[in-house]
Length: 313
Image 1 (cartoon, helix red, strand yellow):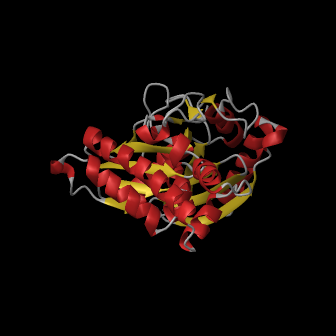
Image 2 (tube, rainbow, N blue to C red):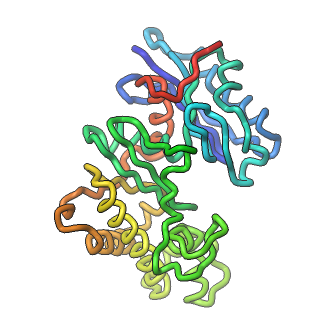
């Protein structure tokens, strides 16, 4: 069986898996991200995890390369980090693909981590069998991707899928993480839900979106209002994207996908209210692969001959 190593490289954890060409994860490994030690240390951990999985591959399984879903904006066709948050100091400018090719002697492909997540769900998860898949990931931030015929649309600079930076009326002039204001992420992300709840309730101690969900489930009216407010804003954007892109299916994942029926109902209502009538039957479903999605999607870069793979020198 052909297989590839898929890597989900985040600011706090690096997860890797040996993925077969049927999309199944054969073996897994993980390690904390040594973010404060710099890019070389981070890439060293990635290389060590990949080597370990290659060396321990079962008989009859042939690893043919490594795919990486990395935090940050990744330059298409180059595999270099264009920009990144301070969760990975010095990460911008890192030549992830080229450095790993030299370290491992295997073909390497690199995309953004949300793009990798979307590829995984499209190829082996909730979007399997569909030609055009719209992925929405809502959690600490709000992002996503469009996957067409098994390939993610990266855009010219790799920025495609930053849906959290679309304007929504609910956001008003609230500051967004990108430095602008009035964007979806300013009201629909986990931190934004906490901020909204603190204003509504006057309780400055809440800093975790899961606590807002817990309070809503216990009947806290302010928590309920914050979840409905966020879900409505997200649904409005989802409906607009369905109108613009006409996907076969919409997949919603990320931490907020576990926010419960109140959030989901608000999001679905707003989505339905924005859609053109002819698009009313486009399915909106929950992501299926969980933490394996980015690993499977990253591996697909190598397994299915994606264009962003650099062969060994």
